[in-house]
Length: 245
Image 1 (spheres, helix red, strand yellow):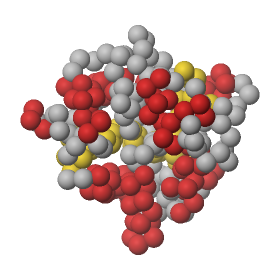
Image 2 (image 1 turned 135 degrees about the horizontal axis):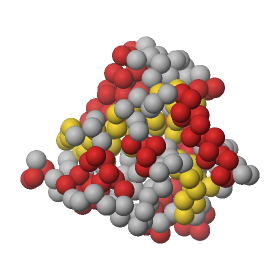
Image 3 (image 1 turned 90 degrees about the vertical axis):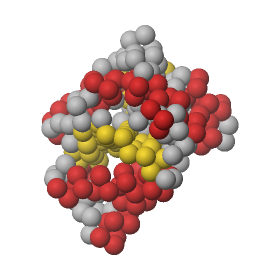
């Protein structure tokens, strides 16, 4: 496990973009797992800049997003499909036929999850999976539980997750109560993992996740078992682990 502590959010975002762009340049046909939420926005902004100013080429990569709210339409500004289009895909030369995001309006949820897993397998192993982390330790939308789901599944969102995500909606009541999410085994099957965290509110869970016991009550703790994990923190998110490094 490699841990980088950057001075601030901007530096953290640039470090993450540098690592992801290096993956794409070294392997132009990489399969990239992508994350949403507030933390990766700066990384996506830097990747767009790299595309426009440094000729970073997205044309041959394949992408799979971690998750999507359920139910939610693609054209809803709070959907992760909309998020990805606005923050990255609309601004780079990606082939949209190679872009995969769970269908937040799927009629048959079980079939949607099964098909998503099949598409990941058919694309080959994910080269690099980007992750954020929730205040409760979730990765993707794998919430703390006595037992974690291994594959893509429908999940009931934790109250802490609903509360944390309500800042993106007009009210807490508008936040979907469920989501489609890659499972922990799917995430852990990626060749490389890169987790980003920013802000003082992530400091304690980062410490518990990377220095505590491995438990389904903190899904991110399973990253300790992966052979190739990079964690990029700003100083605030790293404040609880810095004295121990």
